[in-house]
Image (tube, rainbow over all chains, first blue to last red; front, side, top):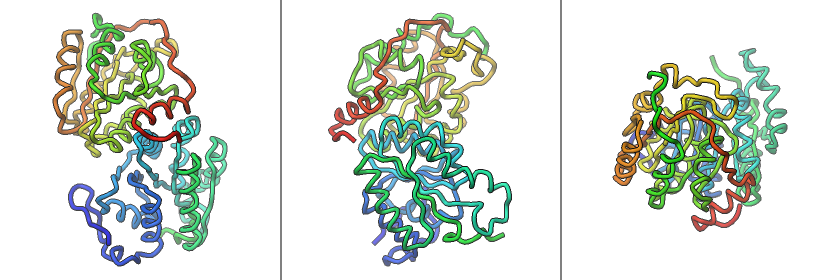
Length: 188
Length: 198
């Protein structure tokens, strides 16, 4: 049963998460908690909204709202130095902001896991999302981060579960890209 | 801020005082001169040196402070490094750790790259930014006597993050080269806290 936190990080409606359901965001939250994640940092994204709320309402997890995505890379490395497992939630447009900061987990071989919701690849309405969408995997690969993708909810849970094992047990830096087809086109 | 302030404060002497009074604090250093300043006071397992990742020092300190809530974390960085991450002060202000102190060694210049003037010598007040970001305490320090007082003040429990800008003399000092093997420094730091390599 999820304990719901009150205070400054109070989430919105998480009532469907207490019964072990909650759809793929609920399953993802459980998988990451089972993997020992106790810190989550994020730049808000509609695709991550439910997962952000689940973490924000989880009293055993420290959540950080960021002003820009690369902040979360450094926060995650600091957490690992102190013995805590962290996850970073961002949108594909924010990956470009992270590139130099990713040299930190790469050069230190620090376990690092980021979940990237993709824009600009499935029924995308906003052409401004296209350039960084195309550059997401290439730029992550170029800086030395291992990239994995998930296209279905079932896939997503399995991919994130094993990516967390590879990150935290094998000292890897991993980004899981969550396909826009899975998330659905942004509603306007 | 008037350019030329901090004409009397020597950065190495100031950092030496802060480290002598660290009292178990975990130290994270920003790349460049702050890393050299801290290393010049003695290489230690509980120092975490950055040689890159500009803009990441205070945030690395935040992650560490959240993971180790019973330990005090002291970030020692420079004005250029902190200017690159002005937004981090908003993030830290909202996260509101009670065990994170940020010391900005402010020589008002980008010292590693040719001593070009930085924003802090041209009107930008980092302590003012931190105060606006809801830090529990944020102020400027200009003399060694004030550093002594700060060392005493840091022993008191904080209600939130604190930031202190030390206005120091600009000038090239001998580099004191901390280990550049990033995996070694990480594993050594983690071992100090009782964690396995990784």
